Length: 206
Image (cartoon, rainbow, N blue to C red; front, side):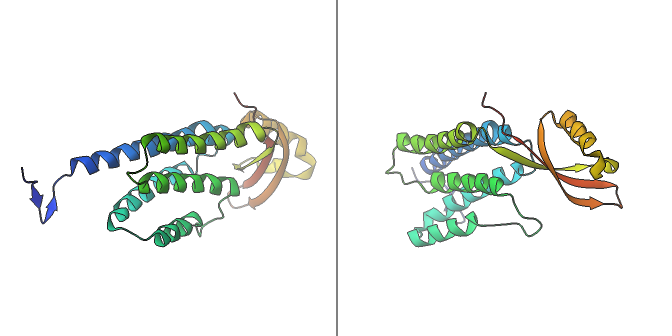
C-alpha cells in the first residue's frame, strides 16, 4: 500500500514517528527527575525551571530534525558547543544554574541524535548515569557545602549595619533556613527594596 503524501511529503512515517516520541519520552522523564528531585531540592529558585525545560525541548527537536539530513559529526559538536555556552544578555546566569542548563542541553543532544544501532538498554544506562552522578555529587558529596540565593527584601530599614541581627532573624523565619551570612548587593530607594544574597548550609539528603 502506497503511503499517502501531501505536497511531496509523507503524511506520517509510523516507525520514525514512534521512535521520535519514544526518545523524547526518555529525555523528558530523565530531565524531570533531575530538575524536580535534584535541582529543586538544592535551590528554591524557580526562575530557571522554564529555561531548563524549554532549552531541552527545543534543542531535542532541533537536533532530531537536523539529524535526518546526515550532518557531519563536526557540525553536530559545533552546535552542541555553541548552545552549551549561551548566556543571556540581561543578567549573568549563576554557575550552578549554568551547570544544570548544560545537563539539560546534554540530555537533549544525546537522546535526539542517538543512532538506531544503539540499544535501548545503552540509552537508558547513559541517562541513568547522568542522573545518578548528578545526584551523588550534589546531594551526598557536597552536602556540607554552602549555598546562596538572591532575594528581594522590602524591609529596607533592617539593612542598616546596626540591625544585622534583626535582619538575620527575619530572614531565618521567612526562608525557614539558618542563614550563615548575607550580602546586600543592591538597594533601590525608589521602591524601598533591597536585593540580598543569603548564604546557608546545603540541606541534608532525604
